[in-house]
Amino acid sequence: EMLRVTGVQTCALPICNAELARTSMCAGVHSWEQTMSKKKKPYHHGNLRRALIDTATELIRERGMPEFTLRELARRLDVTHAATYHHFKDKNALLAAVAMDGHEALLGRLEESVEGASGSGQAIRSVGETYISFAGENAAHFGVMFAYTLPNEEGPTARIRGIFERLLREVERDGLVSGSPQVLAASAWASYHGVASLLIQGCLTEADDLAMLTERAYQCTVRPMPLAVAS
Image (cartoon, rainbow, N blue to C red; front, top):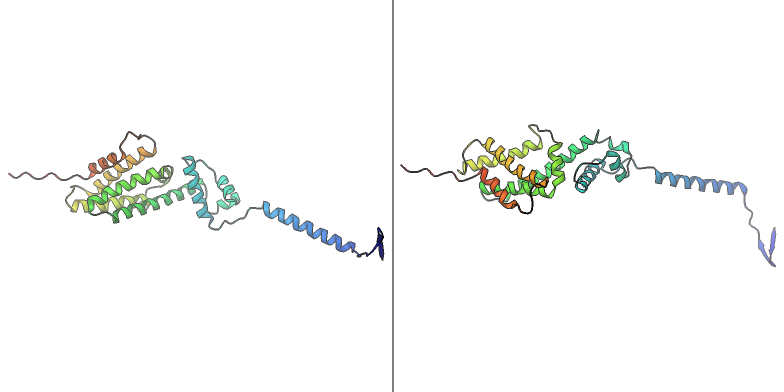
């Protein structure tokens, strides 16, 4: 069949109505699938457990406190709300994991400070300085670490106390202090933790000499033993 348009002859291409309908239908289905794939959230997010802990930690640092919901985390990570419950039964369980993460980081820093010290006296001083510095650098996270960690014989708080006890045994052996290593360790930890808590709660001002407070906490635990007076 020939068509004449403004004096020009062209070949008319036959079009199958059925083929046209089929093509249109396929295009419509493809478009619908693309739209739905954009709306549907992926169930997995690589290591979702790790991502939830990291995102929760970021929010705690941003807001200064653990004010968020699992639903909010799911939106941030572009996963379903239900997916979060495959890793944590509730928000408290997630915060316990965030706390454990912080303790592991703190323990690593404390061990590094011990390794870099020369002598037992310097080691206990360095541990205290590191403890308080870590709290200042991670104020909100530090608060969660002790609010959502249950003390037990194998938990992170027991491991922190173990570092202090190990060092105080060495300090006693070197003759810098006398007494029960367990009691002295608890005293040292309490002194440093007290300064750290006041720091993150904003109770210490710029007028307070943090270095001096840290040194005083050290002196409360370790001081030279009085020399015996010869008779």
